[in-house]
Image 1 (tube, helix red, strand yellow):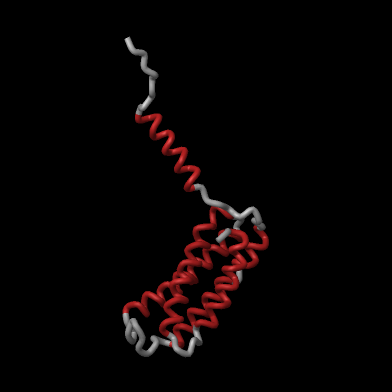
Image 2 (image 1 turned 135 degrees about the horizontal axis):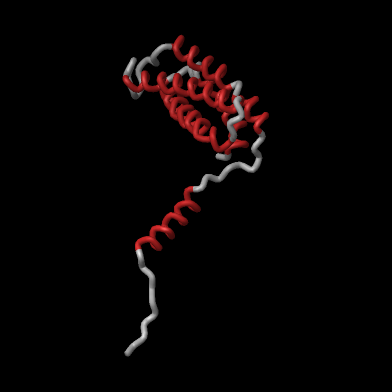
Amino acid sequence: MIMSRSTDRSPLRFFTGVAALMTVVSSPVWSANWDQAAATKIAEQLPQATEKLYTELYSEGSPAGGAFGVGGESYHEFRDNVRVMHSESMHLAAELKNGKGQAETKYAYQRIKELNDDAKQYADQQFSEKPVTSEFSIVERLLDQLASFYGK
């Protein structure tokens, strides 16, 4: 009789291992430099900056020509992204002011950053005189300051 080593290949053991690995891989890397008061102070400036960006954008109107065409769907999506960015900025500032921390607000910060990146890319391509892009630099400066608290 040949003795064989017992191996436990039960589904439960497999899924336990996979769950442990996913926890390690998907765990966010938070910045160790969290400062609630400083993050709140910066975030409270975002709604005003994004509102000014939207107002400037609205007064400029649709860019003439360009890859997306005059008044095309992409322009309206662009404007909507800036509007949502403003709304998310108000949400982030309020959450931080109400004591929500890094873990609770990180995704709002990330969404604002992604919306800003998309909108700025469109503006750089479409607005030849770049009047709107100067407003993006103010928003980007604030987002860069917040990045020191949220990580990149």
